[in-house]
Amino acid sequence: MNSQKIGNLIKSLRLERNMTQREVGDAVNVSDRTVSKWECGAGCPDITLLTSL
Image (cartoon, one colour):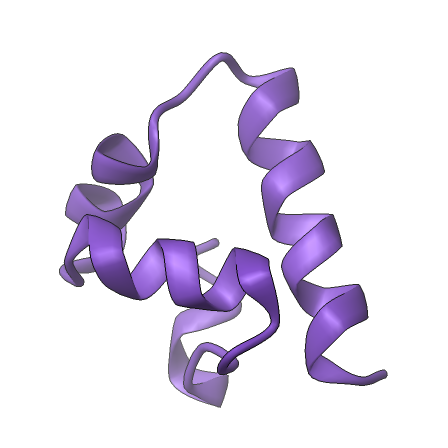
């Protein structure tokens, strides 16, 4: 799975739950800018964060 697909999945799950990027970031102890980068496909969350997401 590439970073763009992971980003799309994170974004769709976030929107389904009516959460902001900040709320997701707070839940996994990262910034909202980091969540934005994940959603844009500019990076991927660390493997240790995937279960928290």
